[in-house]
Length: 264
Image 1 (cartoon, rainbow, N blue to C red):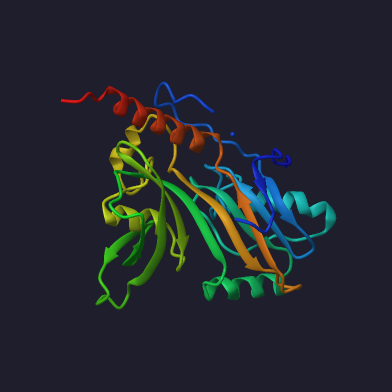
Image 2 (image 1 turned 120 degrees about the vertical axis):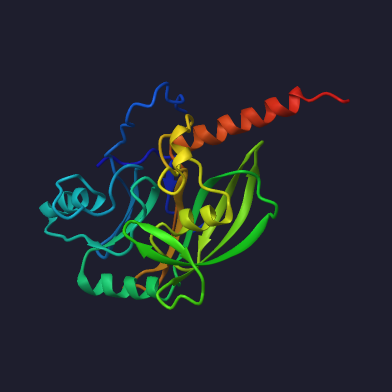
């Protein structure tokens, strides 16, 4: 695993340009995983988009977990899953090294006390600068299906968002998870009528998106309590080049539209 560039991600305690694809060839994603923070109890990785967080049963496809296990094996250390992020999302992913450390961290996630923030680029312009979304979903296969609170088998999903930038027909938002369902951010904004750009899983029409080859979702900030010291650990990670390129191209398009308007 290579160390991240000095300006890409950081562990500070406070909150990269690519061309758009010419064809629709299957995208090639990096398998390089950078370590953002590590000690005897935990490891925090920057997972690239396209890499599985954990292995698929019966498959030898590489994952962040399998790569980390290989890295730690010579030191006779283990890697244990604490939480997950979507395969085609990028960003911060936390692992523990012992059972007791994992148990302590999992209890935090079950209590929803860690601060988990994402950046997402949505289709369309949001009408409010901040908001809270609450939905109910029932997982069916690999999808979250929208339900109502009356469905006793549905799980409650809640997130908070704030608008970072507005483009001609898109919005960059910072999202903070309150709960933590699989695909939650994608499913909630899809239900809101503002799917995440590139999210072909919940909106098939996003498969035609030319500016990015995956869902425009990046885990940018994580804050949790260290399982041994009790100290607050804060990790920040900037979006990768493809995400930044999407934002840049949308910004250029926005500026072009404004410059193209003339007084009546």
